[in-house]
Image (tube, rainbow, N blue to C red):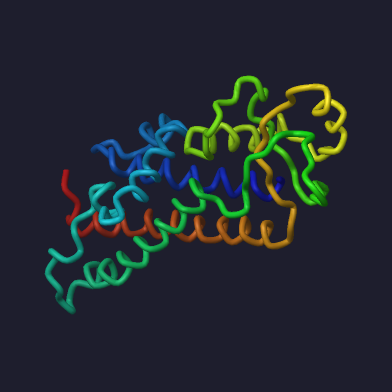
Length: 217
């Protein structure tokens, strides 16, 4: 859980940066950057996944790299063309990690099936079982709710078996199960590293394109 917090926060920071770049003005991006919500960031990533043909540069106001002249004398253009495809692939990877995280699953607190051992997971409590809509899946709204709980460190428990008695007596709670495995921790760590590189490259490339007068507005 401790590794998950900076991973979630870093991906949301990248999303806020890109949204701010898309709404930049002559006064810069600071005002816009501070105004974005996690719901807006989730919609930005959802759009990337829903429309794979959409490229990140289309969403943030960068020029189409295929329409820029390719000249050896213009180092910015050449660097941008080399970087653009890599950024696109990595952004899809980040959006997948944020909205379709591997290894996370929904369950009911205290209900243990067969030989299941809950000691290897942490459980984020989403809502009381009586308020759960049957058939609901792990959609973006639910993911964002769980992320906010993880970041602020509340509504999470690792003492799953303590709820067995309560589960036998009636409804308990719907939870998001987060594995405490080494592979999960490594994945969160790798996501933090990747997002750090992406923030740097998006900021650097934006400044270079702006200085080369290749940005509209």
